Amino acid sequence: MRIAIVGTGGVGGYFGARLKAAGESVAFLARGAHLAAMRQGGLKLASAHGDVCIHPVEATDDARAIGPVDVAIVAVKLYDTEAAAEACRALVGPGTSVVSLQNGVTAVETLAAAVGAERVFGGIAYIMATIAAPGAIVHTGTMARIVLGEFGGGTSARVTALASALRRAGAEVEESPDIDAAIWTKFAFLAPLSGVTALTRATVGLIRKDPGARGLFEKAVAETVALARARKVRLAPDATERAIAFLDGLPPEMGSSMLHDLRNGKRLELSWLSGTVARLGRAAGVPTPTHDFIVAALGLHADGART
Image (cartoon, rainbow, N blue to C red; front, side, top):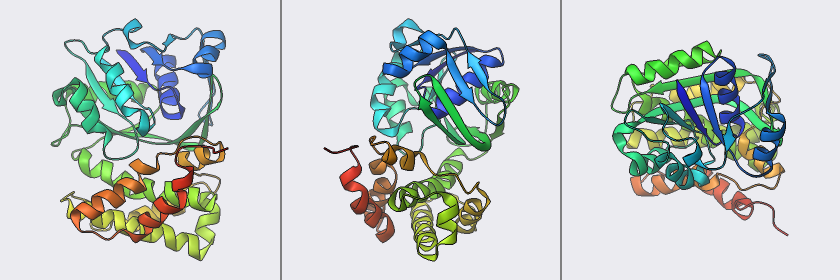
């Protein structure tokens, strides 16, 4: 299978390296110092599941140099979705599919507008992985799970083909009968986790122990679940309780990519996470005071480090 990784950050770098190590034909879209380091020394991955170094690595900042692929896996930050969608145009051939492993619930619309809704299917990644240094990805914990499915319900030959390749690469993969519900189930956990870890500058273990921080997380989850239900998303009846239980099962040192970005003075996905909950909540008439507070409190940092 010919695969393009559009965005070689933590998520794209991890799964792309695993796919390449398992024998798939993988090309990476990257940029800047990260791309330069990959070209010189390869793509390095440190993980409890085993370290990998892909060298030489097919890496470029120009999608036209890759050309049409079987699958384009989009794993950029949400604020880079429009650029990624434009890059995907150069990756599309007669049989190309595009799947997003991004956070949030809005990126798919942008990708579908660029390449056609019929080419896009749904995906979610459950993993904590970051760029530790140019050319180097670090995987925290052991979770490396992907959920795939067709919008509108069910699976397909193209979903199964990518799922099989990812399983051969060592990932835990689920083919979901309702990918919309799966995406919102993750969003109901991820948006609160991102906001609360960044707001408190704390990891999961500290948040679990502190009644105030834990209460903030629980309220943010409840608001997101209420929004999903107002939008007729078929979440499980105990979706709020499941999100809280998921928090309790995570490694105490785990944070979020937003916390990592805040600590490193990088741009935040705030507008696409808590900001989206607040915006969609207003449109649906669902109160979201916790997410409103997160947006207000982190807003000064949303564009990265200030001088």
